[in-house]
Image 1: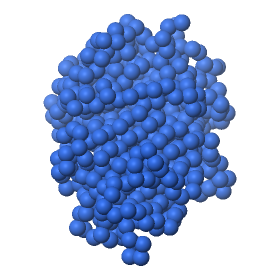
Image 2: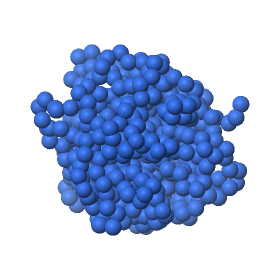
Image 3: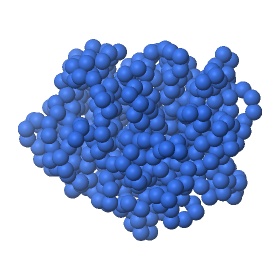
Amino acid sequence: MGEKIVNPILRGFHPDPSIIRVGGDYYIATSTFEWWPGVRLHHSRDLKNWELIEYPLNRTSQLDLRGVGASQGIWAPCLTYDKGIFYLVYTVVKAFYCNMYDTENFLVTAKDIHGPWSEPSPLNNFGFDPSLFHDEDGRKYMVSMVTDHRVPKKYAGRLVLQEYDPVKKAMTGPVKDIFKADKIFLEGPHIFKRKNWYYLFAADTGTGEGHGQSVLRSKSVWGPYEMYKAPFMERQNEGEAYSILTSRHHEDILLQKSGHCDLVETSSGQWYAVHLCGRPSKDRNPPDAERFPGSRRYMIGRETAIQKMRWTEDDWLVLDEGGTTPQAEVDMPEQESDLQLQTNGMKGKSNAQAVRDSEEQTELCTKGGSHICTLIRDDFDYKELDLDYQSLRIPMDAHYISLSARPGWLRMYGRSGLSSKFSQTLIARRMKEYHMSAAACMEFEPKLFKQMAGLIFLYDTDNYLYLHVSRDEDVGKCITLLKAENKKYEYLTDYLPVRENQRIYLKMEMEAGQIQFLFGYSEDTYEKIGPLVNGSFMSDEACREGWFTGAMIGICCQDLTGFGEYADFDYFEVNG
């Protein structure tokens, strides 16, 4: 037996993967929604070990997310490569929870995957999930799904194709439907060419547990496209597509919600598909829930997995293992040596980022099944924040944070409140396992109750658990635990007095989604604060506004007076 790739390969909130190979290097782009910077890029030499590299949308001139709602923003980027140029197309969703969606599609390019990336070129806005196809004759085409605001909708699913002119950097020529269906819904389309066939590779049947992946083909890029239909594809109603990959009807397997694939060929001619997936918690929505009644809750969000593929004798694409269910482990392709992998892995990163990565401590954990867990501790000793951090909608420039005002500490200047979609001072990392912990050391001397700072576990602006220090007129400097669940706010503790002019240690521990918060005055001594909290309300299914991202753990500071009172953080760590 050869070495295996263990799924998911990108753990935590990493949906809608798009993959390419350039020489011996593989790159994956994933959606970031309202989190800044835009689009996560990962690099690998072997399809098993992945590292985060620079974000392509890292300037406000490229991306303005101020005011976008939860789970809006960057949707389904598509990364391609042609003749020395990297192409990235993506959607910026600015209105979604309404009748008429606003889905603005853009393209950026770069000669180096590490940047700099160009300013965006606007494309057509028929719908989301744009994908660029480079044909052998040099012509380029963009395919995307189509939104329909009419009541009732004309079609259940619709895909359109239009040519792109790389010289004019604009769409050109007619827009043509290449897929229309009354019952089957397709999105996330990609076009590939093989043996004179054009293949339309598309996600099907929504984004929940019924999700899947279909493949269609045509002799012309303009269609008509024929959907692959085979006896091994299980369907229980006409609304389900003929899927070559899906978790539906198999609630017991690890990788649920599987679909939204992209395809890559190795240098040796092997084929792999990356796809989104989800690992559910043990909790479910109540049967009378306003949305998704009885559904399992996915706190971690949608992740990225990989499957080995093969072509049939009649040139259709199928899972290498047969059937349609995704595997938790798949065979690796041939790989380079570990030394060469490490050398190439550091290429293009800043020195500080490379050192950070080499300092991460990895240990074997056995809770919830054997897997590799990573303890990441950031002592804020570098001039730039670690790439893994993201903020909400805006970059954390000097107006919000400083790594130089107090060397070895992160200074966070309090700005807007946690419901703000414009100017929050907050950085966070992804939740990656249901067994995890996080901790921070902070110095903060608030003067008023409107000044707060601390440790936060959140899904969006309406759903979070916030262990924070503030000041109360009667109690003085204090600590408390605030819970927000779909705009219902409650304090889970009284305002508990804490010592003046002394650093405070904040911690959260999670076991199977059950969360305990703690605090203390040293790193070795903590006391519990508040009850054990079921954190599963921070999930795709339980949140009423957003449902496409995942839970994040971070640190933040607010000053609702407008004076910008600051908190200093000595370190922040996440384990698991």
